[in-house]
Image 1 (cartoon, helix red, strand yellow):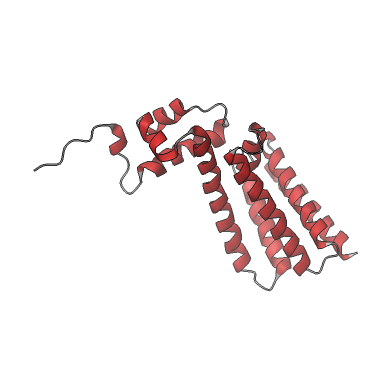
Image 2 (cartoon, rainbow, N blue to C red; image 1 turned 45 degrees about the horizontal axis):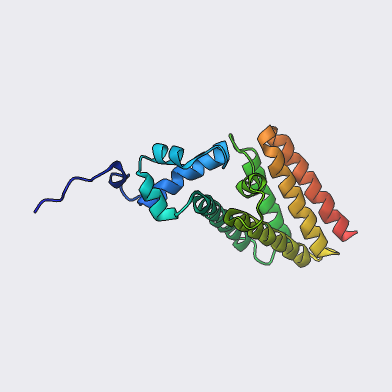
Length: 201
């Protein structure tokens, strides 16, 4: 018995790419480039070449799709962060320097629109929205990591310094959509240096 022809385009995705991943890839690109409110389910369906029923079968709702977008961004971000941290175990100053260089690379990236967590949170006022919860957890984790680095560096008021470092990073991310990536990177580096020096004074 021969295999029946696929009943819709949703079954003809790229080899090795699951239907869920194809939907999420498309939605992630659109959400980041255009914003959450500007991108409807119909556009995701059209751009990914799938049936709307497939989108709802895999994600249930647009809210869940937005949350999945941020969850994947979160996993990618922390995967890169942890890889950098692992290369500098026992050297917190080197770790912070390497993380700063990584952040600066992001700021200089063509088409970079800043932190997706911040972007989505700015569009969704409900603090209990599933995507807002992902974004909030992401920022809490960043503050904790930076405070831990400051503590390992022996800085005074390490928790406060960590909060200030996180604020400096977020400020650069928020400013990124307005351009001037190199200037932002230079300013971020100077701000971080000043914060570290204040913790040693």
